[in-house]
Image 1 (cartoon, rainbow, N blue to C red):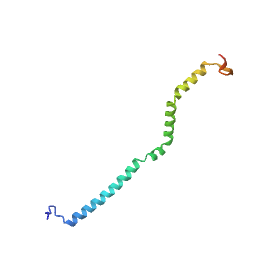
Image 2: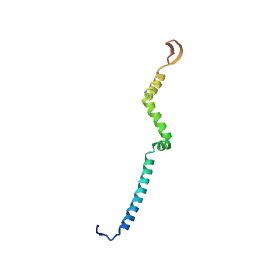
Image 3: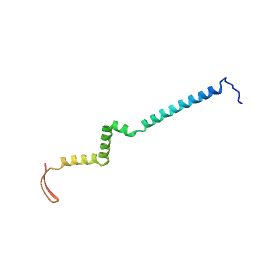
Image 4: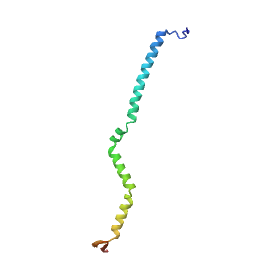
Length: 96
């Protein structure tokens, strides 16, 4: 039989082990809940939906060439005159 170096009875040691086991189980449950909250991406996106939507629209516009196309359209309008008539591929334009 092992010698008792800290003056505790086997029953006291069993109770301490049981207490530690309960505390460990509670800590694991708490950690699982926190991990569940930290990895819930859907809730995070839902809370910032307007910002995410605006960002997605901006990135989509940029990737689709919207900036260049818009500037080209505006520059073309200033350069060209008013269209008088159009026949097929041909246009009659009044230059300013």
